[in-house]
Image (cartoon, rainbow, N blue to C red; front, side, top):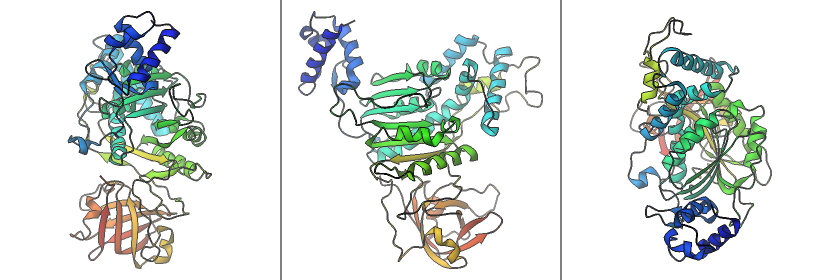
Amino acid sequence: MMDESQRESLRDTARYLRNVRPIDPEEVFEYVDGQPHPGVVKQTLRELAPELGLVETDAGTFEPAPEEPVPAWRARGVPERVEALPETHTGRLADLLVEQYGPGWPDGESGDRLRARLREVKEHYLHGGDVEYDDRTALAYALYHLPGYYASVQYVLDDLAKADLLDRHLRVLDVGAGVGGPALGLADYLPDDALVDYHAVEPAAAADVLEALLEGTGRNVHPTVHRETAEAFAPAGPLGEDASDDARGWDLVLFSNVLSELADPSGTARRYLDVLAPDGSFLALAPADRNTAMGLRGVERALVDHGGEDAATVWGPTLRLWPDTAPSDTCWSFDVRPDLSVPGFQRALDRGERGPRAVGDDDREQGDGEFVNVDVQFAYSVLRRDGHRAIDFRPSRDRFARLADSEAHVTDRVNVVAVKLSHDLTDEPGANPLFRIGDGSQAADHFAVLVDEDALNAPLREADYGDLLTFERVLILWNDDEAAYNLVVDEGVVVESTPVPP
């Protein structure tokens, strides 16, 4: 251990050398008072790395974090999807289960209790009931949700990276971090030379699982877990004494699958938005079910409509295309990505031998997939304070009709510009494909119905979630049964897609 005078001496040396040459503990120990062992110097440099902006290299030296932004998957030449939760993380979670319940954890009484608790958690999300977040709940939650949450955050991070909005030196505040799915996803998405000063706010027993799983992150991820509630935690001041501007704030504030758990989600989120760096991103994620997804959208609207000089702007996906307008539709909007491979721990829990009086298993067959969850479906919102948007497009009233004015255009053919806010919502064979759309002005739900697909309107089906679409001569009708407007895309309608810039 170094005393404070030695640490300050090492700081001064590192500040001087970092712009001259790599900092080698085998060399710089000679410049520190008392010449501590190089191993002690290396450990102290690791501790000081976030405030000094240093990354540790494969050679064991320390260098300034690169200034170039994090490249997106496409720029790295890697597949643009998450295949599975890596074995590094599945193994650590399996170790926690064995440590708590023994090697036969999926079977007998321990397996029954985990399955029963997982059913309680699922019931909680379905009906809004209360669940006691003890050790068993945290492990059950990780078993079921860790893979999906791990994948979801990476897809949004990749969108930010495509826009050069992820720095290689990131100060991250993860509010309601849970068992760590988003934290692991963030750490694995970033390249090895990215420096992450990661702070998690998590008061429940999930923090124990989180800390154990964070041990598997890279050497340049520096985690700190604050065991406080989101309401009690003071979010200001993430920067170290080497920072030139202590008021800068957090580069990424993350609220993942926690807003629905807060007594005042909008008010709490507002406090954290206020400490976002001027060029930072506020990322909120929620499960795709109706209540939580619409709850997230309600928080988004409350933060954007708050007003003031530092008012937030929706970066994506629910862009507000028209100035001085605000949406008030239901906007149950969520993205859907490819399923993950089934992790071994889910398969083990699903197939585990049941005890004689297993709760809830009376009408279910062992291994029927009840405890397998590899869907990647999530609602999200990215807000910023610098006015940047994923697609910088301002429509003209001379060319396009606002969705806010759809009532005046019923049975008319008009030109419309809107964001694609769903995948195909139909689930019946032969049904016309149906997609939610929005332009940020709508007071009622709007859907684009693909009646007669051809080469001119095929982009409606082919466009990605969040892409900007223009419709030429689309027919607007009112659907009384759904209390929504339908934009009928039939023969002769031209649809063009403007995706997020690469």
